[in-house]
Amino acid sequence: MIHLDTSFLIDLLREQSRGAAGPATAWLDKEASTPLGASLFVHCELYAGAAGAAHPAREQERIRALLASIALVLPSDSFAARYGATLVHVQRTSKNISTMDLLIATAALEERAPLVTANRRHFSVVPDLQILSYR
Image 1 (cartoon, helix red, strand yellow):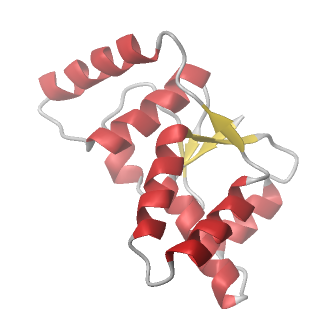
Image 2 (cartoon, one colour):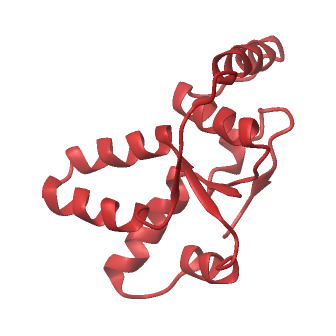
């Protein structure tokens, strides 16, 4: 399974809105046979964005439609311990990561899955996380 970051899904939604395929669509077409997942935290970020949109209900429907074919990845019993250990490691190496990005990264680590994102720099501080780019 490959985990999808919020940045990838937002780019995919934008490409769909424009009616023109772009890098996210091309990557998705290339990985058509690969199982895809998005963590609960990615879902949260997407719906938070929809709540602040000019037309929240329309954005929520677009998100629901997009996520219908992507597995929802929920935290496991060991998630909190891995999150804590990863946070301490990042802090001890004098690096920073947002809480949501660390939650998303931890979900991918728990599944031993790569994470596809436009924000390689955000996630590069997380040890052992395999990061995939689509741009």
